[in-house]
Image (cartoon, rainbow, N blue to C red; front, side, top):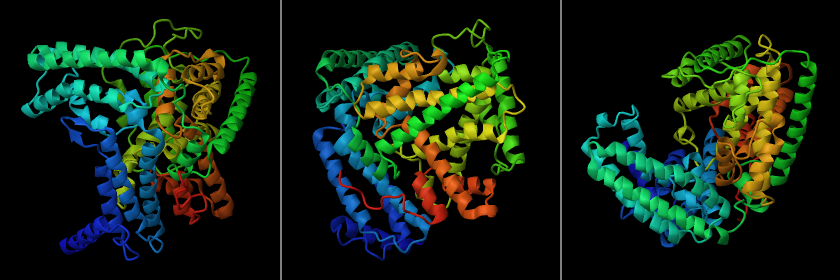
Amino acid sequence: MSKRHWKIVSLWAAIAFAFPTLGLTAGSSYDDLVQLFNEFREFQEAEIVNGIPDYTPAAVEKQFLGLKERQSRLAAIDSAGWPVWQQVDYHLVRAEMNALEFHHKVHKPWARDPGFYSMMGGDAGATIQSRAFFEPIFALFEAGEDGAATQLSLDEDQRSALQATLQAIPDLYAQAKTNLTEPAADFAEFAIRNFERERSLYEDFAVILGVSYPDLARDSRYAAVALEDYREWLAEQQSTMAEYAGLGKDNYDWWMHNVQLSPWGWEESNQIIQTEYSRVITFLKMEEQRNRNLPPLEVTMSRKDWDESLRVALHHVVDYMRDNEIMTMPDWVDPSDYYSMDMEGFEEPVYEKPSEDFLPENTSIDTKVRQREILPGETHEYIGHMLDYQRQERLTQSPIRSAERRFNMGSMRLEGWAVALEELMMQAGVLDDRPRKGREMEYLMNASHMSLAIPDMEMHANHINLTEGRQLCAEIMPRGWSQEDEGMVWFEMQSNLRNPGGFHSNVLTGKAYFMKLFRERAQAMGDDFVIRGFVDEFLASGTIPMSLIRWETTGDSSDVILVAEPL
């Protein structure tokens, strides 16, 4: 774009800011949308006041007013005459603005979720700014990753940024106590559990930093004290907090329709999940009956054997998908990108006793399955996720599409595709030359998704609380392969509650939508339908809501709610 064109765009943006009802009109271009999107992404970041992100009521209200102004500017853009892919990008931006509106009106993590202020929130933190605030501490992990404190070396910028963050932590938790006006007890339960580990990290940092940076070590110890004080305060307040942390069915519906852009709300999603649960358990029992006279699968117990089985499995599935024309495998596809990360520096045994019946209590459902048949789960992770991320990095047509999805907006597409691959590839024959009982492992993997999705739906409907959700997770999983207090169950229930609109429910509704689109395209194209062509076309749209992929690939926008419903 020329400098002159940019000046014109900037002029229109300035007019739009001052007069949002006049600014961007029917003559607006796709470039105007991109500019607004980039501005909106920057706008989402909380202001830093006195060294900490500001989520005080005044700051939150200021952001909400700014959001409404930007929504007005977006509404003034007339995208009706644009190419379909640009119209899809318009609604992608609109959905992200809807997501922030939902955060302000319903989810309100700064007021409801004590873990919003956690360093360890990860993708379940439902926040952007806290990750940026804690970035100097994450960098400390990298600087000392070899574990040798005497070799820790920080340049002046790193040292200064780390000290500023550590010294600001007591003020962060002082602000959190004021901001948390509507806390939920289940959110507090997660925070209390996570903060105990987080406090230990600060204490460990103090030891590491003490060798070369005694002032930073002191600041890290003060951070640990502040965090423990916050944790104790939460524990004292927890009995007075709201029992349920779920969204409620009506809010769940709004999120799915207006942010995920899904045609299905809570009732439809729940029906899909319950039907899939019945199917999976039925198929599992039929496989068990078929294989009843076969010996148990070998259990991979050493890291060396695990890594070798992973290497063989990934090359097998890539070759199988290429040779059987399931999808195009570009020249840049290299399974070693994935398995090399897992193989470095691991030679110790994974578990001690090589027995089919030996299942350590802390072993997750996924690990139990992968110990016996590694291919479906790692197909999910490598083909379903890593290639997605690598493909996303190569998108060039749309700066909006190539940006990482925020607010969990990509979950139906990301997880739905990855979970669909597990079983679809089994049905395509990828397990045919492997031990037959491996099919049982695939259905157990499917059952594990159910054990997470069903509590997800029930908690968001506010039918059950966190404790009951973890118990339900354990009850649903066959063979006793889930325990309510194991780490993965805690983490996944956290992901469910702290990601608005459901997380694991989107795994299954995403799979269902992919198969719906598959069926529609096969029926519409008849004898001209080619699986590889369909999959390549599906993936080319990027990680966007499934209904937008349907619109882009078929021209049918009927599954997309084009104007937001009242919230």
